[in-house]
Length: 525
Image (cartoon, rainbow, N blue to C red; front, side):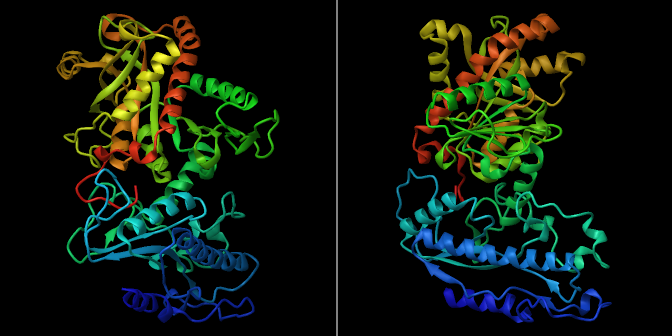
């Protein structure tokens, strides 16, 4: 196995190498792209590892070598170095080969491959994903008794993804050189930046190497950059337990909760991170780092941190299923343990009152944004662990139980629609579908978030609060809405936070349910 990988390594990398980078070297200008020799880093051959920590250290070393190579050459060119070669560096990769089936605990949803074959994944930002990679590689080695091989992949790293977080190019890149940037460096390639693995659309033919992880290196890099753009916070600040909302009221309340938790040393929280990477540490009232942005980002995120990223991230995703898909597409690459939707909904039953809660146990998908990725006929199941945590949290925070609890919380189907002004259309069609589905509430995000959680194997749940009943003539008026928000938001948020804390106390392998796994799955969760 190792000999075959070494041969491929030499064919792909060494045969194109023209020598190590020498800043003093010059070449004649005016060469066409075809005339430029290809220059790559001087990579070592791949190595086998039976220790997950050592394997991750090697991934870090290769990734650092690759990105430093690209950055050094780019900066040299900014300082006047002439273009002398086409420059290329590669993502590191993990390869694993086995000739037998794993004898593992069948209750474990991940950590093993389904059968004999060759498996691989490209890796980016091993510094950011060190704990995740160590855990996943460790399970693979332990369950199969075989080493993983760490080496250089065939996938180039785009220059755009090689810069350190926060680096800004002075001016337009295209104006800095006398030729297009793509003539010199690799640019992002959409053919390697997609969700074919997560969607189950990869080639699973015999003798074709299979994916080890649900996302490729380029796909992860793309989302890490999008997260920083949309939320104005570094991906490294994101926590493993995520709350999503569509109202700023909830964000304001979350900040108040976070500051109180840090002041009172509650539940081991260590810092609050706000947009602009403004960090306020426990015991301090003033930020220790960061600068607030001139204007808030599209989807501001706040992070109440704990060791091991076990705290809570809350994001205001705005309104609509498109926003819900956009942010969860990107948060998913961080492999969180749970995301929950806390928002408002239209109550569809006469027996509901404003302020009642709806715990979604099924979803009617009329949002349409995921139809091409997850067919509408695919059921999106409720996850028992999340449902129990939410129900118990409602009981604890409200102090109600039994019949009294049932009076203010219903479980049922939540319908998600892509038309905010659905009330203005002819009601005969929508009302009939809602009635046939037995829906008890309607919103614009919950089914999208649940469906993307199902698609990306991220545990999900929804607890909504009834804010109006349009089918029964109860619409929110400005004064009514403000009073309602002031009264209900604090309690609703407290329930969501308590539910996440309950889920945090649960072993992660139990939370990552087998309901989210298909017939042939990647080893990495």
